[in-house]
Image (cartoon, one colour):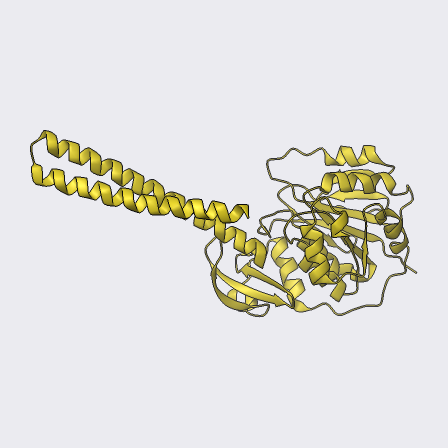
Length: 331
C-alpha cells in the first residue's frame, strides 16, 4: 500500500533556520518527496539549496517546471514562481502573487489537496502574517494530514498561530519534535479518496496562470466593496469559516489581515503623494507671490500669499495624518 509520500512545508520569517534544522534531522531513506515554500524576494539570489544539501543527508534543489518527483529529495519553490504539485510532477505557476508573495504557501497546499491529498502531509512553520492557513485548511478538507509548529516555539509565531486557529490541524508540535513526527506521518498508508471542492481547483488554476472570468469568480465568493491593492479591480470576499480572504479576478489574493496592511500601504502612498503635491503648490504660490511683488502687482501679491498659506495649512493636516498612521503602526 502506498504511503504518505508528499511532505509539503511552508514557512516565512525564521524559516531558513527551521528548514536547515529539519534537513539535518531527516533520514537518508525518508520515503517521501519534500516540497518547501519559503517567501523569497524575486531579486534574491538564494543559496538555500546548497545550505539544505550541506545540512543533512538529503539533496536539495530549486524546483524546475515539469520535473518528476523523487523520494529522498528536497524541492524548493524558486523566487517569482508558485510551486505546485501535480501527481508525480512539479509545476511552476506564473499566477499573481498571493499575500504579497510568489512563491506563496497557499497554492502549494491547494495543489496537493487537488492532486494527491490522500498521499500528502502539510506543515506550517515559523513566519509572519497568515499565508498557509487557507491552503492547509483546503488540504485537510481533502484528506491530507496537517501539522503546525507550536507558536510558542516559533521564532515568529504569527503564521503558525493563524494556521492553528483557522485550519485546526491534526498535529501541533515544537520544531525539535517535528522530525520524529514527520517521519512517522510519511510512513502512514495513504488515506481514502475524498472529493475535491471546485473552488479549490479554481484557485490552483489561478496559481498556474489561468485568467478567471468574473462569472467564475462568483462561484467561489461574493463581490465586495473593496478594490484590489495591486490592480484596483473588484475583489471577491471568500468566507472560509473563521478565515476571510479576498481575491480579484486578475488573481491577486489576500487574507483579511494582509489586505488591511496592503490598504494601509496604499493609503500611505496616497497621503505621501498628496503631501508632495501640496508642498509643490505652496512653493509655486510663493514663487508667484515674489514675482508679483517684483512687478508691483499688489493685488496678486496678496492673492498668492493667501494661497501659499492655504496650501501649507492643508499640507500640515496631511503631515499630522501620516504621523498618526506611523504612531498606530508602532502599537
